[in-house]
Length: 140
Image (cartoon, rainbow, N blue to C red; front, top):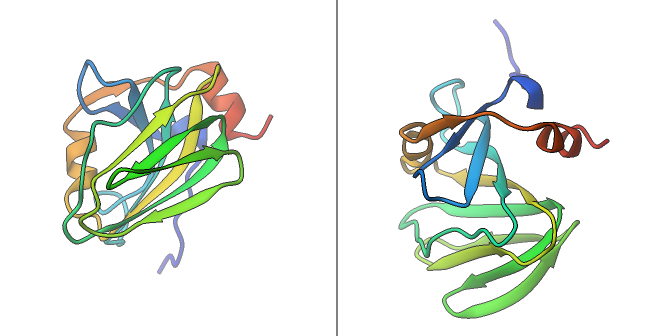
């Protein structure tokens, strides 16, 4: 029995939830592919892009900034974020993440439990990661 899962940025499925969204997700691990009750994605924000205000009643959401800079807010409290920063949102917090930099913002985003986030992402339109995305995700 296999006791691990593996994913590579080049083969990760990527989705944009809504056609007008300015962020998209490369799915690494989720309940559809694995035996986890969490979702692990690389969230990619276009320049000026942001999440809509959102909240998760039962899930913690974790962000680790891989590249770029931005602004995160939770229940009206704002903090600047940049490469190497991590933050954890408590269930029920109303939050926004926004790219304030001059290049794309990349975060490792984990939500546990999944609380139907994977299904929401997968219900969106499939998108292709571009060469910049692949380069950043491979650390080049």
